[in-house]
Length: 174
Image (tube, rainbow, N blue to C red; front, side, top):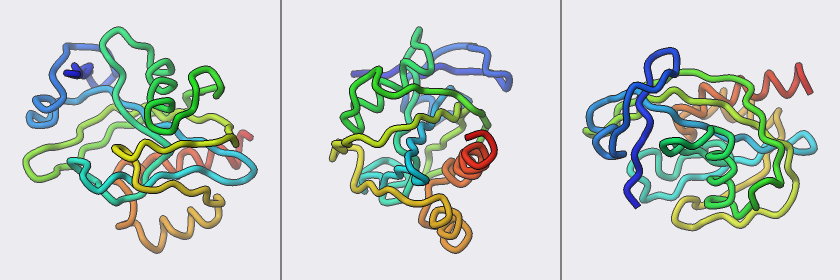
């Protein structure tokens, strides 16, 4: 299925739409989201499938993607939780806690995203989609902090920005 991404300005206002490959070739700022699942002092992280066009075999948040044209960001997050982790839509109470913009170049392509940070408490079963995910694991907040400090090269670029925001929120707000 061809996926048209939502192009946005620096304030996250829609300014157009473009095919996924074109968007990543032309360095166009577009809307994205990163979902973080947590429970019992741990966070679910995933190792991206090695054949992904970028960041393969790097650890990242529970799931991430782009909303489709006309799709609410939380609806899109619920859709991707089901597609990537087999978690039925509506089971998680999704909440947006932050957002940020980042740019990362990858061999002729780039990620230039306005990324919405979404969290949900969930401790049920996950069934990783092998086309998207190589591995998953639950990691304590302290273990994750240590890994981020000692081995940032093991993590996707956006995760290095988003994870500290989520960890801070979990410690301060929860």
